[in-house]
Length: 205
Image (cartoon, rainbow, N blue to C red; front, side, top):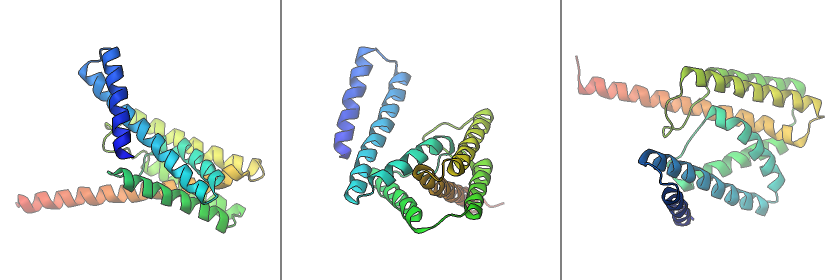
């Protein structure tokens, strides 16, 4: 699968690079964009097949759509390998579906979960991939606002649509995504502290 993705990406990239006489910078940007799109699309197909075999394809679609509305503005955990990303994504969606089917949500619990999610995105979002450039302060503020609005929208729709299946799934997806942000932030803080300690030990006063 990985080899096939690389071949497809290379051929599409080569076609556009030649057809439109792209400069080096535009060529690099195009290649990165193609890699992201083709990688994500292939993962979506694999995950859909897996959950179809488990007879949970509609649950997966609901969860995937909910995640797709929020993750672009919040970021989260990222994996260096294709297999690692697939396995984590499968575990993430399976856990979200398991929670939907296993836990009954009353008004109080639902409200607490949404307040938790709002606080996390306001305090921590966005946490982009290391491959992306650093966001400006204005963009960070915009992403925080959009993330919060998406969460508020799902909260109101959950209650106003008589607990539609999509919005039931979206609750747990949003909560798990926010837990991802906590884990990612913790990892970044640990790495930063580790680097500082290494520098102190390397160059003692």
